[in-house]
Length: 350
Image 1 (cartoon, one colour):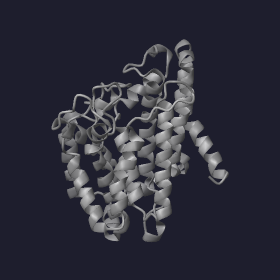
Image 2 (cartoon, one colour):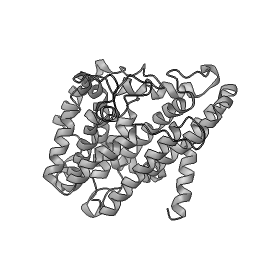
Image 3 (cartoon, one colour):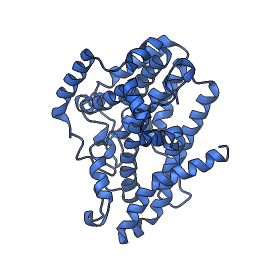
Image 4 (cartoon, one colour):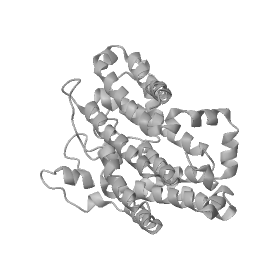
C-alpha cells in the first residue's frame, strides 16, 4: 500500500496483478519441486491439470525476480518506520525457518537450513536498511544494483573444491543438487535498484506526475525499440528444470537473456504507474478484487504461509503418485487456502 498523504494512489492495481500472476507460476514450480524433487514432473500429462499450469509457468519462470522487484519497489514507495522494518526482518526470519522445515527430509520435526530466498532477502536488505534515511545513499545503492545486474559474476570466479556457505551465499555453486539459487551477487541488485526506484517515485511529486501522465510518444518509441531488440531472445527460459536444477539454470543466464525477458516486466510496471491505466483497472471489478486479496495486501505473510502449506502437503507424495488428481488439488488449493488463513489471522488481530 502506498501513501495517500503524498498524493500517491492508494493501490497500483497493475502491480497487484503482476505479482499475483507471478505467484501462480511460483506455486506451480514449488509444488512439483517440494513433492518430487526431480527436474521433470513424473505425473502423466493426460491425468493432471498440473502440466497445463506448468506450460504457463515456463513462460515466466523468472517470476521470483518479478516478485522481488515489485515488492522492493512498493516497499521503497512509502516511508517506513523502525517498527515496520523490524516487523519485516522478523517475517523474513520466520521465512528462513519455514523453508528449513520444508527442506527437512527426516520427518515432520526436521529442519534443514540452506541458502535460499529468505536468507538472500535478509542479507540483501541490510544495505537498504542502512541507507534508508539518506536519499543520496539510496540512489547510489540503486545505481550499483542496476550495474550489478549486467555482470555475469559467476563466470569470473572459480569455485573452490569444497565451496563453503560464504561462497554459496555470494555467488552460488552448482556442484550439488539444488545449489545456485539466490546468490547475493549479482541478484542483490534487484532489491537495491527497485527499492531506489520506488523511493524516487514515492518521494518526488514531479516524478509521480510525469509517470502518471502516461507514456508519451518519445518514451513509447524507446519501449518499442527495447522490446524489439529483446524479442529474439524470448523463450530462452522455456526448458527450465522444475526440480533441483532450477537454481543454476535460472540464476546463471547471461545478463542479455535476463534483461531481454525482464524488460517486459519493467515495462508493465512502468505502464501500471500511468494514471489512465490505473484508473481503467480501478474501474474493473476483477482488478479491484485482486487488490483486495490478502495476497496483495499481506503478501509477505501469505508467502510464508504458502511454504507451510507446501511442506504439510508434501507429506502425501505417495498418494499423489497413486492418484495424480490429488496433486492437482494440492497445487490448486494452495493460494485459496493461504488467502483464507490470512483473512482469519487478520480478523484475529494478527
